Image 1 (tube, rainbow, N blue to C red):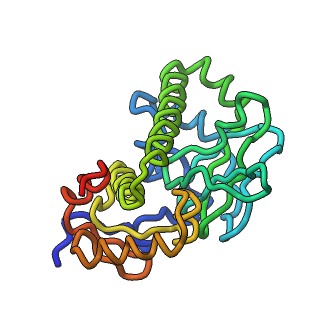
Image 2: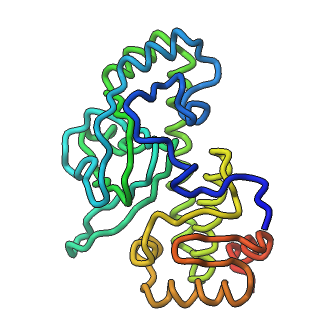
Length: 250
């Protein structure tokens, strides 16, 4: 099989967990930063960003109820956001991949409403919000870009509501795979071949499905040659068919 674009495996899809990475040389800067920023402005932004040691699988980035202080850009790896239901059960509210921002849920009430946990080894860039506000006032393009990130977050929330509103379990899973596909494509990775950082249990929790249903649908899609599955590696063989399934088409 010939790959026209690199598959999103850990060996090439993830930025190295290197503290020497800066905004200027990070391979995700075209996603995180406005294209109009000059190099000296990027340096000013880089000075306020904090890069700590990588999170390990299961580590918390922050917990619901913590005081809001920063937003975080995922540089490598993946994380999940979750909240606690009225019955005390965890409910996953989203998965975040490199180049995406978490923590903006804390803006409204000055405390985070979600907890964020690493799905695998992950590096993040912490951006103190008060410093970001100060810098945004001096760099209008940065302020506009942050508003765009907030708009994207709102759009993703709306897409999640639409996704969970689908009564067809197959449509929910197809929609999730298409979401990951398009997000990989935005990072110049393969839209057709990628690794799922989340478990089948997490997928079921997020989509409101049992793990048995998730496994059954993956098997059905594989037998129908819509996708190929090898543990966590997904190969989309028929993008059109997957898109039709996401619409609820039989």
